[in-house]
Each structure stands twice: as C-alpha cells, then as structure tokens.
Image (cartoon, rainbow, N blue to C red):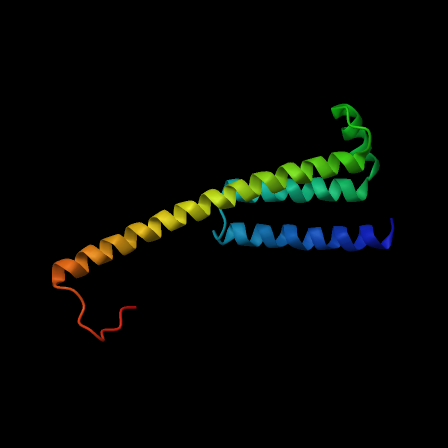
Length: 119
C-alpha cells in the first residue's frame, strides 16, 4: 500500500466516523447517511483495490477504469447540480411567498412610515 492509499483511507475512516456521530445526534437523516456512507465505501474500495475499477469498467463495456470513474463523476455532478438548482428555486419561491405575505400584512396595517427601518 502506498502513501496516498494510506492517507486517503485514513481520511475516509475519519469521515465515516464523523457521519456516524452526526447520524447518532440526529443532525442528518437516514437516507442521506446511507448515500454518503455508500459513496465513501465505494471510494475506499476503489482506493484500496484499484483493479476493481477496471473490473467494473469491463462489466459496463467501458475500456478503462479511469474512464468509468470519470463517467460516474460526470453523472454525479450533473445530478447534484440539478438537485441544488431545484432546491434554490424552491427556496426562492418560499422567500417570495414570505415577502409577499409580509407586504400584505404591512399594507393592511397602514404601511410603513417614511424613515422606518424594515428589517
């Protein structure tokens, strides 16, 4: 095992322990923990046994293991960017709804006086 593998596997072990701690305290939900742990375990397997990426690539009909990792990374990036875009749009809609509600309440109350600081 080389220095990179030792350092990477150690970092993944620390991250897995942290995930377990966050999950136990209820700071992250079960499905999120499961996906993150599976991703870390897959990364650990690929680091510990690099030949596995070639085996998986051959199974998928891809020429090299590095290409398979690149394709999986590209798909994950696409999924995550779409997911976070949807979350951003959802958050903007919620904020718009709250601001609209506050504006209606303020208008019903008679409006703000000139010089009032609205925070």
